[in-house]
Length: 501
Image (cartoon, rainbow, N blue to C red; front, side):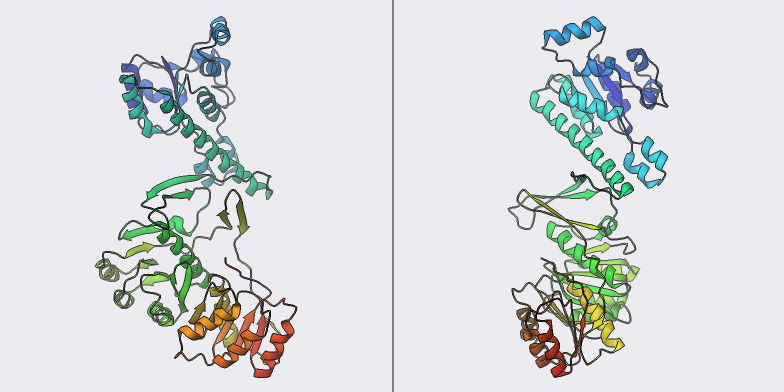
């Protein structure tokens, strides 16, 4: 048998080479891989002794040779193929051990020449060739498979299923690799092809998905660096599917609202949000919005959690507390609760620009909702500067509340979040009914879409709402404007709809 070894990640390559040599496998290698194996005292043949041609073009061409690909691709059970390679003096290559140039790492350099030079050509070509001819050639692309390969070779335990598994891993690697290159050129040109490619790398198996009967895993989109890339669990159990799913909108909203923002979230929708004078003040205000729903929820803090805040947080059960950081004593206090997950987040990282939703055989891809809300006053009564600040605060929150959505707020503190209703007036009604003793006098209201009727304004007036922000755009906008003028409520059209389904 003959094996070709050519790897960028040289983890375990010397041990593999020694193991193959001990089994009587002849070794062929290239460049740095050859040097490392030879320096370890393993008998290995340099690639140009096989190709009968030196490496050229600064290493761009070294394995692109019929003496390499012919030795990999010929079918061992084909008389014609066997005759051809024998006539041309091409020797078989039965094992190919290859991994690829570090294109992902080259992207970090921001150097266009370095990036282009790290587009691997020979590596993927050998991987694809060997994987295509997997019935006759073993293709190994993952150092974690080296030990199993040696064990199977020793015990003559190489079956078709194993060969197919290695081929699957090989094509997964080249597809992932090419997806990153394609995305680089899409960003470079600002253009998109008809083929949209994403490469996701598995980070871990999760215990289950949304429910115990559903399998799930966590993957990383290595091409981008998003908020959750910075997430570091410093205390508590492993994160679950639902934990990640809920943490994401919580930290996105906390980032959007800026320093001192505290977001309490339950089942994908905010239940209490505030930006106070300090982190403790923000947490208390967020907690007071809905002290029942916050129990067992997620809290994201755009700031450092101090001792006073930690003591207050420890009074209830929270699934996750995510923050920029934790004061040492605050961390000690919260770490006494075994079931809470404490997560550090770098809120300075930019949010990713796309959202992907996989349907039953179709995929929806959209830009994230970064639409800026305008302030177009459409009523006789004008909102004060303080009102406008609250309106814009409430409108940022409403973007993260499931549609149909209404948020009522005052003093950069939510007083109620009405989520997921079939009617917008029902969303407001749910706030009113859920907090029957709450004083909404002087608060503001934000809606994720326009009012088709004036009924929401009528209810808002009954609650004491003083100012409203909504996108406008209904054929019956004037009905709502007239109702606001009737009751002395100021109304602002934001021109931006914020559905979240």
